[in-house]
Image 1 (cartoon, helix red, strand yellow):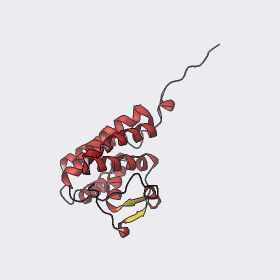
Image 2 (cartoon, helix red, strand yellow):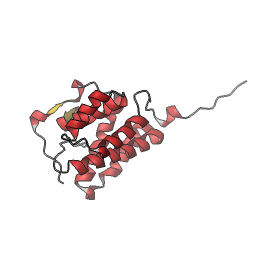
Image 3 (cartoon, one colour):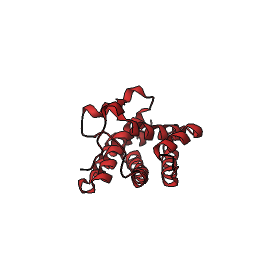
Image 4 (cartoon, helix red, strand yellow):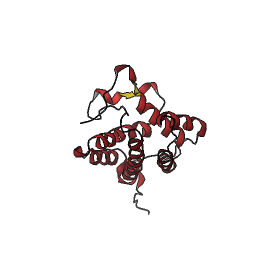
Length: 166
Protein backbone atom coordinates (compact mmCIF):
# COMPACT_ATOMS: atom_id res chain seq x y z
CA UNK A 1 0.00 0.00 0.00
CA UNK A 2 1.34 3.44 -0.91
CA UNK A 3 0.42 5.14 2.35
CA UNK A 4 2.66 8.09 3.11
CA UNK A 5 5.22 7.40 5.79
CA UNK A 6 4.86 9.62 8.81
CA UNK A 7 7.63 11.41 10.63
CA UNK A 8 7.42 11.23 14.43
CA UNK A 9 7.95 14.98 14.89
CA UNK A 10 4.94 15.60 12.63
CA UNK A 11 2.57 13.74 14.96
CA UNK A 12 0.77 15.51 17.77
CA UNK A 13 -1.96 14.51 20.20
CA UNK A 14 -5.45 15.17 18.84
CA UNK A 15 -6.40 16.50 22.28
CA UNK A 16 -4.05 19.49 21.72
CA UNK A 17 -6.62 20.95 19.32
CA UNK A 18 -10.09 22.36 19.83
CA UNK A 19 -11.93 20.29 17.26
CA UNK A 20 -15.47 19.33 18.18
CA UNK A 21 -16.75 15.77 18.35
CA UNK A 22 -18.08 15.83 14.79
CA UNK A 23 -14.74 17.04 13.41
CA UNK A 24 -12.76 14.39 15.26
CA UNK A 25 -15.29 11.86 13.99
CA UNK A 26 -14.68 12.74 10.36
CA UNK A 27 -10.98 12.12 10.87
CA UNK A 28 -11.36 8.32 10.92
CA UNK A 29 -13.67 8.47 7.90
CA UNK A 30 -11.21 10.67 6.02
CA UNK A 31 -8.36 8.28 6.82
CA UNK A 32 -10.22 5.38 5.20
CA UNK A 33 -10.87 7.48 2.10
CA UNK A 34 -7.18 8.38 1.97
CA UNK A 35 -6.26 4.69 2.11
CA UNK A 36 -8.72 4.05 -0.73
CA UNK A 37 -7.14 6.83 -2.80
CA UNK A 38 -3.64 5.46 -2.24
CA UNK A 39 -4.58 1.81 -2.69
CA UNK A 40 -7.91 1.41 -4.52
CA UNK A 41 -7.70 -2.38 -4.34
CA UNK A 42 -8.32 -2.17 -0.56
CA UNK A 43 -11.80 -0.76 -1.19
CA UNK A 44 -11.34 1.13 2.08
CA UNK A 45 -14.02 3.58 0.94
CA UNK A 46 -16.56 0.96 2.01
CA UNK A 47 -15.16 1.02 5.54
CA UNK A 48 -15.38 4.83 5.49
CA UNK A 49 -19.12 4.64 4.82
CA UNK A 50 -19.57 1.93 7.47
CA UNK A 51 -17.70 3.94 10.12
CA UNK A 52 -19.67 7.07 9.26
CA UNK A 53 -23.00 5.23 9.45
CA UNK A 54 -22.06 3.59 12.74
CA UNK A 55 -21.05 6.93 14.22
CA UNK A 56 -23.98 9.11 13.07
CA UNK A 57 -26.63 6.78 11.65
CA UNK A 58 -27.76 6.64 8.04
CA UNK A 59 -29.41 10.06 7.95
CA UNK A 60 -26.23 11.94 8.85
CA UNK A 61 -23.53 9.32 8.26
CA UNK A 62 -24.08 8.58 4.59
CA UNK A 63 -24.29 12.22 3.44
CA UNK A 64 -21.29 13.10 5.64
CA UNK A 65 -19.21 10.31 4.12
CA UNK A 66 -20.31 11.16 0.59
CA UNK A 67 -19.46 14.86 0.88
CA UNK A 68 -16.23 14.09 2.70
CA UNK A 69 -15.25 11.67 -0.09
CA UNK A 70 -15.56 14.51 -2.59
CA UNK A 71 -13.19 16.68 -0.53
CA UNK A 72 -10.69 13.85 -0.11
CA UNK A 73 -10.83 13.08 -3.83
CA UNK A 74 -10.12 16.74 -4.68
CA UNK A 75 -7.31 16.77 -2.13
CA UNK A 76 -5.80 13.59 -3.53
CA UNK A 77 -5.90 14.97 -7.07
CA UNK A 78 -3.91 17.97 -5.93
CA UNK A 79 -1.51 16.24 -3.51
CA UNK A 80 -1.02 12.76 -4.95
CA UNK A 81 2.54 12.56 -3.76
CA UNK A 82 2.24 13.84 -0.28
CA UNK A 83 -0.51 13.90 2.29
CA UNK A 84 0.57 12.26 5.51
CA UNK A 85 -2.09 10.53 7.58
CA UNK A 86 -2.40 8.03 10.36
CA UNK A 87 -3.60 4.46 9.95
CA UNK A 88 -7.26 4.29 11.05
CA UNK A 89 -6.82 0.65 12.10
CA UNK A 90 -4.07 1.44 14.62
CA UNK A 91 -5.55 1.91 18.09
CA UNK A 92 -2.70 4.19 19.27
CA UNK A 93 -2.82 6.31 16.12
CA UNK A 94 -6.44 7.28 16.75
CA UNK A 95 -5.31 9.73 19.42
CA UNK A 96 -2.74 11.46 17.21
CA UNK A 97 -2.78 13.58 14.07
CA UNK A 98 -0.25 14.48 11.43
CA UNK A 99 0.36 18.09 10.46
CA UNK A 100 -1.51 17.48 7.20
CA UNK A 101 -4.53 16.08 9.06
CA UNK A 102 -4.50 19.08 11.40
CA UNK A 103 -4.59 21.52 8.49
CA UNK A 104 -7.46 19.60 6.86
CA UNK A 105 -9.45 19.59 10.12
CA UNK A 106 -8.69 23.28 10.70
CA UNK A 107 -10.06 24.08 7.26
CA UNK A 108 -13.26 22.17 8.01
CA UNK A 109 -13.44 23.61 11.53
CA UNK A 110 -13.28 27.21 10.36
CA UNK A 111 -15.51 26.70 7.33
CA UNK A 112 -18.19 25.14 9.56
CA UNK A 113 -18.08 28.29 11.69
CA UNK A 114 -18.03 30.63 8.69
CA UNK A 115 -14.68 32.03 9.77
CA UNK A 116 -13.50 32.93 6.28
CA UNK A 117 -10.10 34.57 6.95
CA UNK A 118 -8.76 31.66 9.01
CA UNK A 119 -10.36 29.07 6.72
CA UNK A 120 -8.65 30.74 3.77
CA UNK A 121 -5.27 30.41 5.49
CA UNK A 122 -5.91 26.71 6.13
CA UNK A 123 -6.93 26.19 2.49
CA UNK A 124 -3.78 27.93 1.32
CA UNK A 125 -1.62 25.69 3.51
CA UNK A 126 -3.53 22.54 2.58
CA UNK A 127 -3.30 23.28 -1.15
CA UNK A 128 0.36 24.28 -0.92
CA UNK A 129 -0.51 27.83 -1.99
CA UNK A 130 -2.57 26.81 -5.03
CA UNK A 131 -6.04 27.69 -3.63
CA UNK A 132 -7.55 24.84 -5.62
CA UNK A 133 -11.21 25.58 -6.50
CA UNK A 134 -12.25 21.91 -6.28
CA UNK A 135 -11.03 21.60 -2.71
CA UNK A 136 -12.63 24.91 -1.76
CA UNK A 137 -15.96 24.01 -3.39
CA UNK A 138 -16.18 20.51 -1.93
CA UNK A 139 -15.10 21.62 1.55
CA UNK A 140 -17.60 24.48 1.52
CA UNK A 141 -20.37 22.08 0.48
CA UNK A 142 -19.46 19.82 3.39
CA UNK A 143 -19.29 22.76 5.81
CA UNK A 144 -22.63 24.14 4.62
CA UNK A 145 -24.38 20.80 5.09
CA UNK A 146 -22.76 20.22 8.48
CA UNK A 147 -22.35 23.74 9.81
CA UNK A 148 -21.44 24.17 13.44
CA UNK A 149 -25.08 24.85 14.27
CA UNK A 150 -26.10 21.45 12.87
CA UNK A 151 -25.94 18.79 15.52
CA UNK A 152 -24.89 15.46 14.12
CA UNK A 153 -27.01 12.88 15.87
CA UNK A 154 -27.71 9.25 15.52
CA UNK A 155 -30.83 8.06 13.71
CA UNK A 156 -32.46 7.06 16.99
CA UNK A 157 -32.22 10.68 18.14
CA UNK A 158 -33.30 12.11 14.80
CA UNK A 159 -36.44 9.99 14.34
CA UNK A 160 -39.71 11.13 15.85
CA UNK A 161 -41.07 8.84 18.50
CA UNK A 162 -44.64 7.71 19.07
CA UNK A 163 -46.36 8.26 22.36
CA UNK A 164 -49.79 7.44 23.71
CA UNK A 165 -52.00 10.43 24.37
CA UNK A 166 -54.96 9.99 26.71
